[in-house]
Amino acid sequence: MRPSADSGRPVVAAGDVVAQVRAVGKTYGSGAAATHALLGIDLELRAGELVALTGPSGSGKSTLLHILGSMDTPSSGRVTVLDQDITSLDDDAASAFRNRHLGFVFQFFHLVPSLTVVENVALPARLAGRPAAAARAQAAELVERVGLADKLHRFPDELSGGERQRCAIARALVNDPVVVLADEPTGNLDHTAGGAVMDLLAELGAERRTAVLVATHDPAVASAADREFALRDGRHDPAGFLVRSDG
Ligand SMILES: Nc1ncnc2c1ncn2[C@@H]1O[C@H](COP(=O)(O)OP(=O)(O)O)[C@@H](O)[C@H]1O
Ligand SMILES: [Mg+2]
Picture (cartoon, protein in one colour):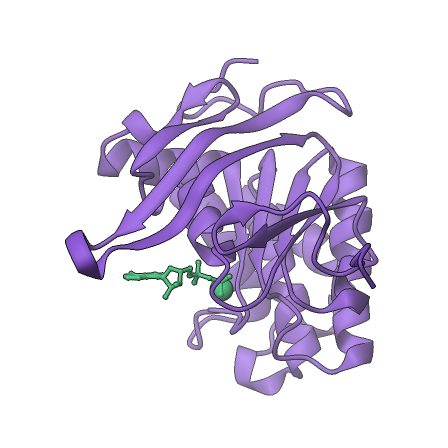
């Protein structure tokens, strides 16, 4: 498994380890004001699995997603994606790597308001250098797959919250990433729309052998996952967050 800047996605088999977090710590600030957001985190993500990253507010979920997404660097430890140490990349290399191998889904969608659904989805493919027609064709196929075929040319503000998030999922997948990182993707949706979003992430991740890591504190959301990785005060909590053994 060797990543390269602009060739296609490396071949991964279901169950292959595609991302590794080793002994990762993150401290914000210093001295008396220091916040230990993460301490000694070890996590592996395998192709095609959906992992719920759980824990109460402030437990370190977003910090871990940012570090895995090469948007922030750990204070200690190592993170590899496709055997590439992503903590050693400079800014340009990190953004190229992100665009090529990672997908992101946010609580508040982060769609570009002036672009249509199909244009939003095609954007990461265009940024990766794919010709316009090819990017658009690929985007249209994904838009259809997430159930928005009749809304290709709508703008984000003409969509419901659930539809916006389905559009964001299509965008996250357009470059065929090995890992999708989703931060509270259902946090702004009702139960039904949130369920549809989780079903899509589960189905598409399995189909495309994409590892999906979903931060949530909602048990209904986490129940769609293959497994739970719980955080408590920045440490892994093997007892889990959602199903407490001490009841
Ligand atoms: N940029 C930052 N500067 C200082 N502290 C931060 C920063 N980002 C997060 N934190 C702190 O790190 C801890 C973990 O935060 P976060 O990862 O956002 O948790 P979660 O996503 O689980 O709610 C919290 O105590 C938070 O206040
Ligand atoms: Mg958070």
